[in-house]
Amino acid sequence: MGRVYFAVFGSGLGHATRAVDISAKVRGGGAEVVFSSSGQGLGYLRKHAPDVQAVECPHLDVEWTEEGSFSSKGFVVHFPYMFRSFAHQVAFESRSVARAKPSVVVSDSKLSAVLAGRQRSVPVVTILNQFKVTLPPRYRGGEVGALYERIAGDVLGLLWSLSDQVLLTDLPPPYTIGESNVEGTDLTRIVKYVGFTTPSLEVNEEKLAKAKALVGTDKRPLVFVQISGPDATKRRFADIVLRSAEELSGRCRMVVSLGYLGGSGEPRTLASGGLLYDWCPIKDELFLLSDAMVARAGHRTIGQCIDTGKPAVLVPIHNHSEQIGNADKFQRLGLGVSIHSQDLTPEALAAAIDACLTDPSYKERLEAVGAVSSRYRGIDAITAAVRSYV
Image (cartoon, rainbow, N blue to C red):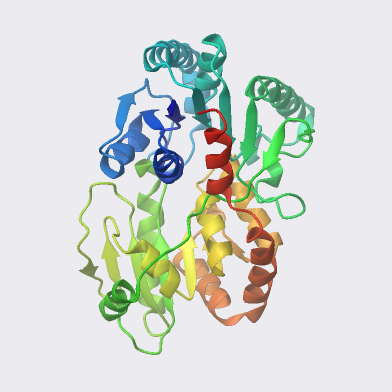
């Protein structure tokens, strides 16, 4: 069998998490895998796939403010340096592909890997959550913003189409969660919708029983709060969650995961009676046991909520256009509640959690959309596409 060069976007953990799942299936078929990533993604890959070579690529990410927001000012100031970093990324990936001599390059949201694979005449399979870049809300609207988005979308579409296959990890219309990141583009000849890349939650009864004993078995509903994303974006979100936990303690049980890779896997008991993890080792069990979720608005998290039928309160990262669009579409589909970061207060969060726990319409809509999602298996579809080259 051949070798697969898997280039993984390093900001946050969603890309790296699915890379581990997909690579495990690819390796199970006899192929070899080499990872390339940076930042949080690289740390996750090295921890969860320690027997796979993972090379460190030059890091490229947007700027974040101390309040946990995407920094549009920082982006503008540092854009020339980001362009230079991107050029370094392309050169690095090209050299790494030449050394690895793979049968196929798999690019998870990394344009540098697409260009490197094309430069080295190696087939490229690209995995995307979003096809184009949209501006943060404060810059949207007006002729200039619309023109920028149209040009950027056309250019990105042209560059992504250099891939041999482009696989969008979403549901087809009208259920597309990342709708705002594909609207205005013609994807029919370029993209294949493969569904969410959420793995099946295979938790045995013994693990489930241990998790139940840990979180308690009283009659109050269980809410699992999963805080993800770049570490700089977590502090304010976590503070508000912990404050709302006190108000909700009489009505529900809460388990909070701060999502710090390498953090303690031992829970601390909150004053409200809930549990707090730096890094939660039983998140799959909690997904199954919970009555509602609170989370960011990444594709993988949303897919897991839909596939497990969990209503959710989604709090997108402030000024993060992709997550804002995802959360708003989730709410329009009637699957839960979206709260923009600037509107997040302990009172607003508590009210939204109460709504998810008491309004039966969310469960009904989740069942309907979940039936659509069940016809797709994103990880299996991507694995099959990769295997076709090795």
